[in-house]
Length: 60
Image (tube, rainbow, N blue to C red; front, side, top):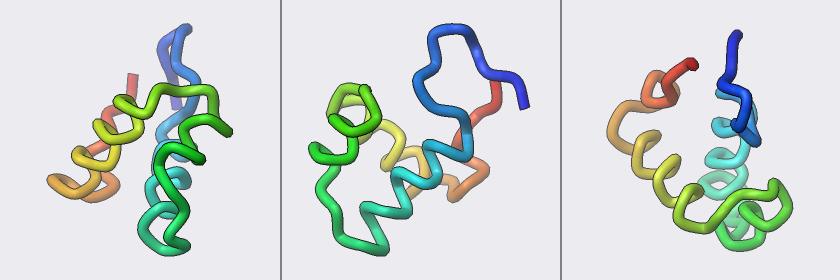
C-alpha cells in the first residue's frame, strides 16, 4: 500500500486506532497523542469509518 509522504499512519494504522477506540473504549485524545496526530484528525478518521467502514479509509 502506498501512503503520501506526510502521512503519520497507514490505512492499517488508522483502522487500528479506530478499532481501539470502538472496541476497547480508549479515548480518541489518548490515541491521537500516542500516534502523533491531532484530535481533529482522529475524529475525521472515526467519521470516515462510521460512514464507510474500513473502505472509508482511502489509500494514497
